[in-house]
Length: 154
Ligand code: HEC
Image 1 (cartoon, rainbow, N blue to C red):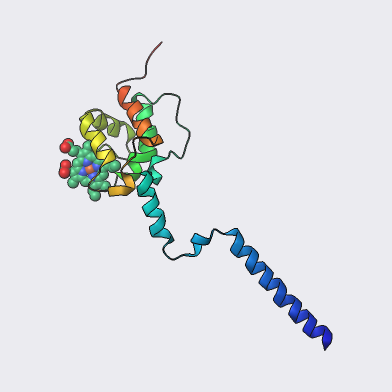
Image 2: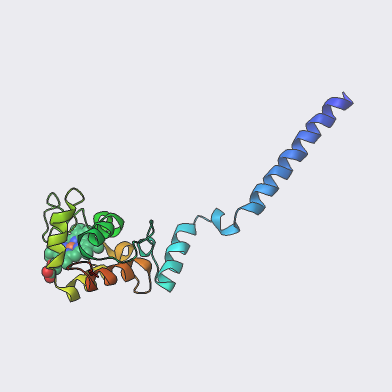
């Protein structure tokens, strides 16, 4: 009998220990139901959103059609394609995941100021896609805009 209660107590104590270890390891705010909102708010405070970060290493210089293809995969095809794809139906069709070269030609002729406005303060995809000018993605797009017609030859 004594042995059984000891075992039960032992199990209870280990469970308790496991639980407290688990609680200590995860950040306390992770347990708050407001977590999502709090994170959203802090993102807005420093202005960064997920879209500001590239998921793959950028080629040395973003230029010409290959440079655009990279941006299409990283950003335009993710955030703008719902609308700016032929099936989305809103011109210009610069975000067709199925047709990088046609998308490139459409992107070439977008007025650059308009382009910048729509990637930093987009009325349609909102805060999620609106880029911070200090972020990787914005800088990558700006670099491409400077070299959009072709890659430099030397
Ligand atoms: C929910 C649909 C939707 C999404 C998502 C969307 N757009 Fe648009 N976009 C539109 C519509 C509708 C228009 C045309 C009407 C307008 O200009 O207000 C437009 C127009 C444009 C234009 C042309 C504006 C002009 O004056 O010539 C550009 C450039 C543009 N969008 C860029 C983007 C970029 C970049 C993204 C992604 C970051 C994006 N859009 C995401 C709906 C969308």
